[in-house]
Image (cartoon, rainbow, N blue to C red):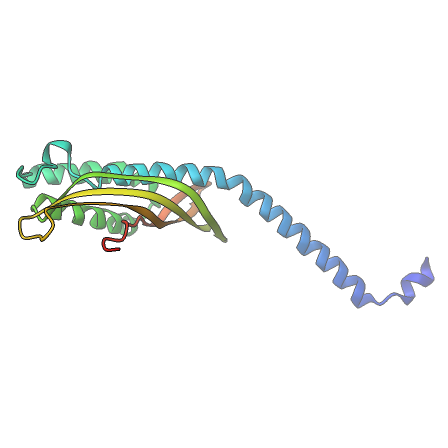
Length: 192
């Protein structure tokens, strides 16, 4: 045995040990990531439902002739911010970007440029989970339905779009929990 160890190439032995270590690391990383996927899927489903619910005005204001007062819109925006803030990383700028994006659409609706009557988004399947340290990018396909009532200036008074969309949510793990850093929930293509 002693002769065998003297004759063996130490570089090959060290390389084999390193390769074995890398393989064990990658397998354990894959197992940990596989355990996280159901939690991430559920978090994404909950967030999508919450954002879509707040992407339309309250039921009584979805008709194009009904005006929503500024104070009512402000109260609705505050309610929306309270609903989505638990999903977001504890960073006011990240949360404010989401609030501004959703709130901008709500303000446009309240001004009467268009009103969304119906907005549904159901996740069909998850395409990929791209882990990068404490972050993960989740890509998924959704079946999206959106029905609008447009202003009188529009060539089409009503539009209904149904289609598959490619959506993504980027999450970061902090303090043992996953939080959203960015979300892009798309609408179907308008013109096909």
